Amino acid sequence: MNPLAVVTGGTKGIGRALIERFMSGGFDIITCARNLHDLEDLEKEMKDRFAGSTLYYLPADLSLRADLDAFLNFAKSKNRFTEVLVNNTGVFIPGQVHNEAEGTLEKTMETNVYSAYHLTRGFVGDMMTNRKGHIFNICSTASIMAYPNGGSYCISKFALYGMTKVLRVEMEPHDVKVTAVLPGATLTDSWKGVDLPAERFIDPKDVADAIWAAYSLSPRAVMEEILIRPQLGDLD
Image (cartoon, rainbow, N blue to C red):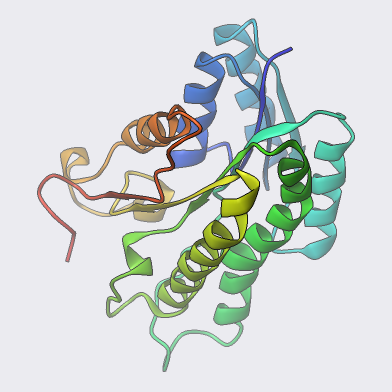
């Protein structure tokens, strides 16, 4: 039986690149996204490309606790051990603390932090029991460096980074690996419409390859953080 990875937010950007990379490595995948049509298209493409692996999916908005619980129950219904969990779901709403729309912080925290917290709690018990598993939280360079139009996004990514550090310490005695992934500007939908060449951004496949490399280390080592920036440096 193939090993299993759960990757949230799998239809675009880093999530999609991760699904391609792990399926090419012989994994089955469970994923979610808000758009059912995008999930159906993804499943069809992956089935054509990776005949030996299976992609399971469920439409879900992980900022909503009912959807999150439904996705967790869907994953658990497969009665499979989750070797890898990637908390990738995220939202970016530009703005500043003093002027962003009311409710922006709540929505951003629910999507970027609470979803990772609750899904981790749902899967980590089995990892602890089996004394193996790897959790990747997709943080950001915004987790370590604030910027003027980051607002609630920066707040949420600082929080996710902190949660990842706490989880890493907690999981050390249980042989469960925890990695914070901190990409800079990556060519995803968050940058759609920006008048900059693709070469100015990180390719999502590079992030996926780095995560695969971290997963591939022996049980004796863990890559605690993966910090990736565009070769030409951060965007202003």
